[in-house]
Image (tube, rainbow, N blue to C red; front, side, top):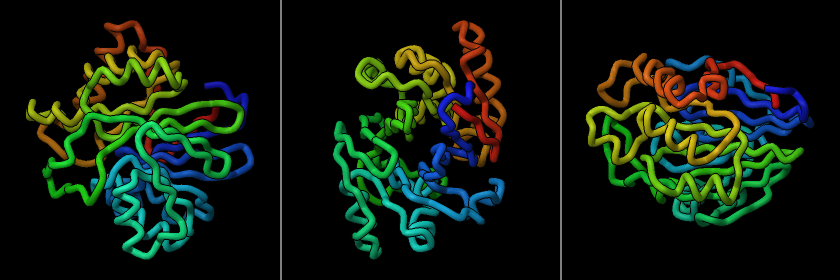
Length: 251
């Protein structure tokens, strides 16, 4: 990826990413890092956090939000129902509630909340939802670079519409937690994620939601192996960027 605008992204395992602008403004997506024993400790010593974007409130996407909010007092952007829960915890001054399809500008970031296809009744491996339907996030950074974080979702036709309307250059797509087969009602497997990427017509794909810890029954290393096979078959090997935990890439 070319370092043309100074924006950068860091992967912290599972579905957690930080976005940093050239001016140093920092946003975090779906924070579950400091309480994750399998993740690198980088964000435990984070010195600045301006915004938290939340796709939904399952604990594996939400677990560190309240602790980080108490420490840094960032703006918190989430779906309306999730914001009500956050407000009950004493953070009502920091929250920015949104509806699906809505767009807000928060600091240097512009965010659009998109639809996702993920039942809010799933309960597995101790993961449960607090409030609000899952959503996806389109985040536009300074210079116009746009990243799409799909959150938790199964494959659905909405990927084509998201790509047509919002044209994200970078697609952060989940590839794990698909076995048993019924889990594909709420999660994309590598073939589904590849199909979603082609629907989106994004320039790059970064896989997520795999390998950090066990949420389902497939071998931990299987999702990435299958994604490489799917990417090769689809002719997009050079557009799939596997980020290691704690590694930063520039745009």
